[in-house]
Length: 134
Image (cartoon, rainbow, N blue to C red):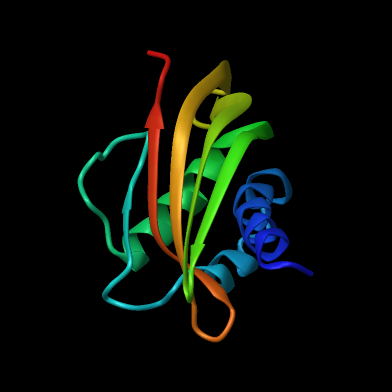
């Protein structure tokens, strides 16, 4: 498998957790280190550490049923043991409110940048997701 294929596989593993609701792989693909950081397309918008990021990713994916995503126009740049992948991202699903037994269709269009380091396999060290639609 080429480096680009390995990197795409990490990104797919990240978003597939939203479909399968199997979050065990999320810990495996993130760098569990104080150097990890993330910005999200959903509140809170502050810079997050690894633990907060993992908790919020799981909460987001649990809250969305019928989740689907599409990675569009990925651009991968590898610099030795560091890689940057930037792409357009579409996410869709039903945002479920279990307390009120209601749901709302959502469609999030956005952009994403992931920074990965190879220690010894590729791990996500930074995520930046931003919405392009309201």
